[in-house]
Image (spheres, rainbow, N blue to C red):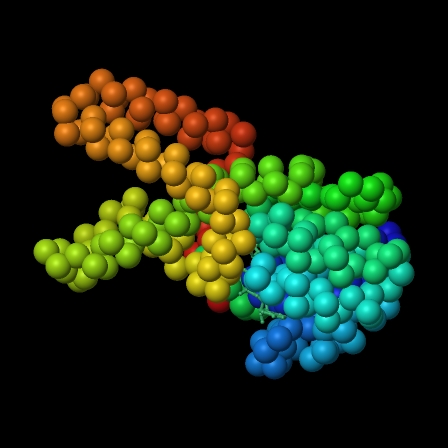
Length: 305
Ligand SMILES: NC(=O)C1=CN([C@@H]2O[C@H](COP(=O)(O)OP(=O)(O)OC[C@H]3O[C@@H](n4cnc5c(N)ncnc54)[C@H](O)[C@@H]3O)[C@@H](O)[C@H]2O)C=CC1
Ligand SMILES: O=C(O)C(=O)Cc1ccc(O)cc1
């Protein structure tokens, strides 16, 4: 068997993403030892019941001692508090990374606390589901998905290559970009779709003329797809909105303008404008399928906790 990439991996936060990493690290023998820490004692106990790690530590600072890879799998708003807490215990030469859905804010929260000699390389696997917690993870989550790393200027190339090799071993393709650009891209492809989903399901829930039971009974598959996204973790998505504010507001403004144009086309019976838009958007869907990026939504249900 080949040597594992890392001796000791510390996972701080053991929800959907942290526990998926734990599972793939175990399956692919990517580390000799997995140490797990998370804020809630109940979640830590559950991780132990599931056998996700080799050691379980209530104190994140103790968990990172001697680790050569530390992965933060926590809501982005908790980044600064956790970075401050673990910073003095990080081993010289260790790689510190995260999996947060926003990057510029995570860099601002963590970078000032990283001791000299520790390689901080932010990351974001573009893979997930609407489920959360340690039961929800699965080892194949990252397979054939992209993982975006947003290295800071001056990042050690060997450390970057080692973290890239780690994600490739988890089954992902790795891209690098700067944190601000990451946040703009993700605002349109991930954050806005979730907000639209939360909003449409909220609107349906607020109607007086259509009852809740009618919404449930007659929900067509389009609406059902929105309810899947709108079932995503409220803490995580609150933090994403608060920590990618500018990019999300920019995309929401563009979206509102385009929605107003659609409204006008419907009001004035401009069938050609509607037809042209719907033809253009069909092309995007075809490109996604051709690129092999499409995953049928029901697949996610099979991994429900
Ligand atoms: N859910 C998804 O589909 C994806 C999520 N992400 C990102 O991954 C990160 C983790 O998300 P999930 O695993 O889905 O969340 P989750 O809710 O399943 O797990 C979060 C974990 O963080 C722990 N935690 C919360 N606050 C903490 C604190 N202050 N200190 C220490 N631990 C704390 C919780 O106990 C739990 O173990 C988030 O930043 C999210 O933006 C990235 C890609 C996909
Ligand atoms: O469940 C889905 O469809 C997702 O879009 C999962 C997801 C959520 C957040 C991310 O930062 C990346 C992926």
